[in-house]
Image 1 (cartoon, rainbow, N blue to C red):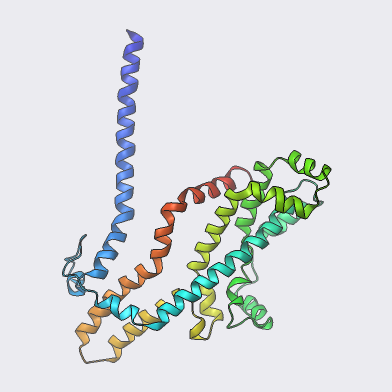
Image 2: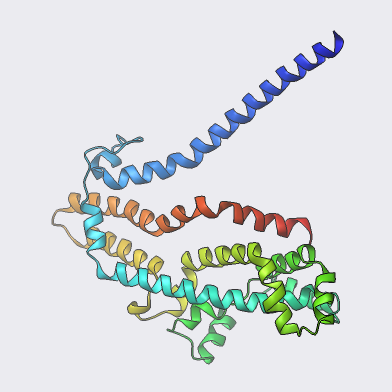
Length: 298
């Protein structure tokens, strides 16, 4: 009888716990999803209703005027193409450089690898600053070129540590020793043994770097001068600034221009975030795994 009562009490406690957890999870989902749904609804709604606070969840008096104004701008499509190019080239460079740095640092037979890791880790806390970085990029002749956006950040220290940790904790050293005994060179060991066993961490690195390049804004603002080379984020900034300037400089149809500028703000947010939002549900597990790899063993 005592055991049955304990089991019943335990089941009731578990139900209470599950109810609390589910309630908190629901609140978190609402807090996260509502701003996204509101932005989508506001971009399709009459901006006057949005400004008056009448749009709460679902769109009202649907209009596509803001979308037409944004997509008629040829720079939007040029910016999309530039961003895709920068993301692809930058991610490939990041992946190659990070792998070539992380693998040697993961090997226990590398002399002084602890000292190397100390100096590499210090770069996470100290940097030369904006002006020295700009002068370096300028002296290398990379200003106003694609390379100014992909070369300076070729290796992210955090990603390097995550990949090195994966190599250390998930690929046994005995496998590498056996490959060496079979006459495998270091290069063949990396390409034929290590990389085939490292597909999960490679996927994590691709995702980390690709999302970083897609959202990159500050470097382009500093180093890029030609509008033909603007990435999407910078193009959208220009579109938003132009729409606001039209409101300030024009006295004709002032009210309609203010309303259009309000709608354009929401459209800009959707355009810049949509590719990443569509990608996240499919790659979320890889991001979580990447964070866990870096947190388990340093």
